[in-house]
Image (cartoon, rainbow, N blue to C red):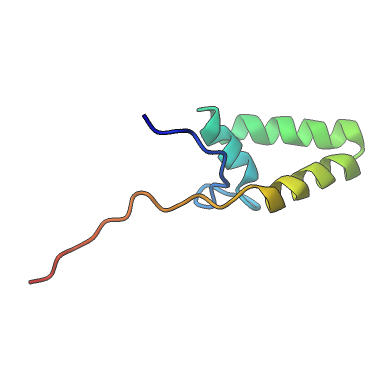
Length: 74
């Protein structure tokens, strides 16, 4: 059994992949997390929410490439 890791998903990213990574971790649609983030930004007066987002951007590692396909040339 593999452990789940909270990582930024830059393939489905709009800005940095933080919200897409959260959506992957919780097996949800990234749009749901984007709507919640926008509501949080508006309710907190933008600056505190922006600080939380930037902190998550710095703390969360990038997702590792797991679906790499190799071709053998003979």
